[in-house]
Image (tube, rainbow, N blue to C red; front, side, top):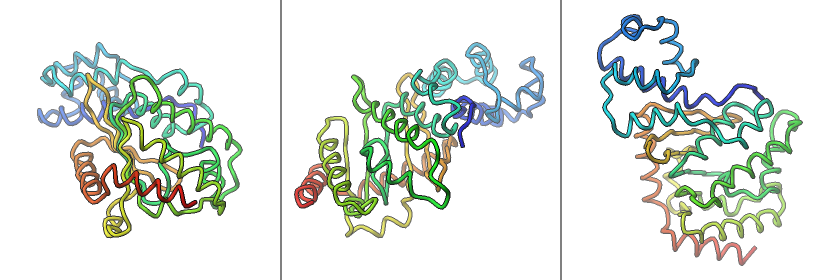
Length: 284
């Protein structure tokens, strides 16, 4: 549902890191709040991602928890300092907070990795392909279909900017044959779009062959977004029906990264993947 709330994934990521740091020092919320000179309620809200924290206060709180200068500290301060781009904020009140969160993270990304077992990844979809996906569902077609399509196409600009993130999408081989909307012309145009994208220097498109389909059982659709320096934090985004689940816990994210590497090891090489996509594109 559309929401007027600003993206909160930054606040949640900061909050989870602060909670982990407090636990490391065996401090209760009440004790940490008292030492910091803030109320227990404020501290709890910050840790739960429900309250923004100013960079200056975050810096002082990191000092309290003895978080030394390094990737973690720099990443958290980066999240607290930077706000979503103007184009993302233009969609507030029209799209969900989760959608805005996702675009905000992609804008900050140094690397984006994704696995899609059923459909073409959103950053590589054609407008017709996207429209057919959005039109399908148990509920009536949403009134903001155009906004959803425009938003997805706007997200794709991250791959064509002057300093694009490294993008590694893995798709199952069946994706290259799925006729979304039942129209072979849509699949033909979409496959050619994939062939074009696969030739970009910063795109490492891989195909998980049907001969390795046993890997599909543990590979649900997901994204791994790693922020640009000075931060190095990675957020995992799990695609579920009609929603996205953001995972910020470092141990869980590490497990998701391990899963992605297993999928990558089973996928065709970059060259072999492009060859297969070209073959299918020429036949369609």
